[in-house]
Length: 162
Image (tube, rainbow, N blue to C red; front, side):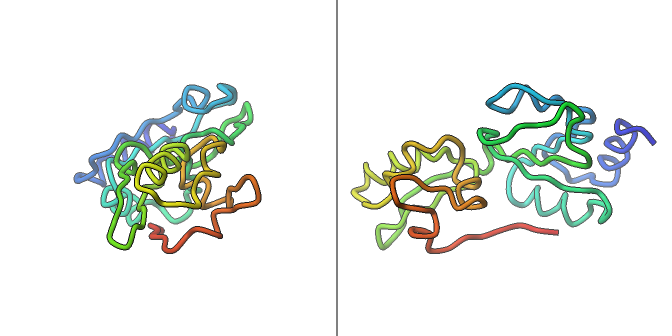
């Protein structure tokens, strides 16, 4: 079965899928370094519910790699096996909540988190200003700068898994 066939087969089995599933998708087009090979399958979920739906029906033996903005990612020429999940606009919400807390989706750029916090008078998040990428990547890698790290400011995280 080719990856195009697998993408077609998965799409047929997932009638409620809202996001885009593409076979042999170029990753150099969506990473900051603009190098590397393709994703065997690239899924761009519309939102959190779409991601949960896809993962709950994705074959368990199919490797899954999640990427955000692709700022800290070098892809080998051979690409990434399995399905690559690219978080996009559906994961880009940001807002200030009760108690002067900032809530941000995984695809929100770090610099936008720093700016929103500063605009709301929330201290302690300015270190994100110098970190390229999204807040999901900062969480996954405990991103930090200037003596501060994500672990120092994170209060809560919500995740989607298989």
